[in-house]
Length: 133
Figure: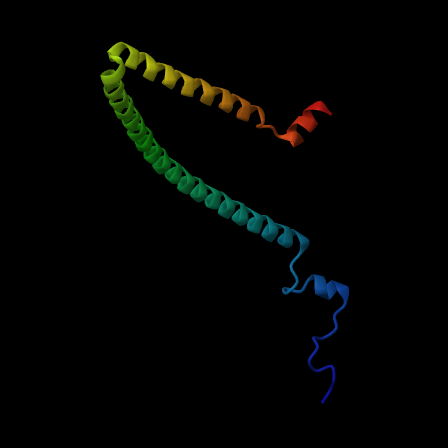
């Protein structure tokens, strides 16, 4: 057996360039452009599907959060009314209203100050460094 029997025949450069197995640079570039176009279209389709899914999840979450906020406010109103009824028995309706209103305003102010202080910590050092330097 000949050792070169498994190898293709040796061709010179001109024969290799004109060979149907060897595409030209132009054909390679066309194929590359076609594959890049297909890849870009697949990426666009992927991100569109991902956006549609995220949008559906966000919409569903917004509905559930809305329901929970409405229920929470209903519970808060019931609590305040119950507190008014209980305190009115001991202090009278006017002072009970003042006590409940004062407590509600105090809770609101404390929460607002805590929220403001917490929001001041919301910084992105990387972005601020880019802006300053």
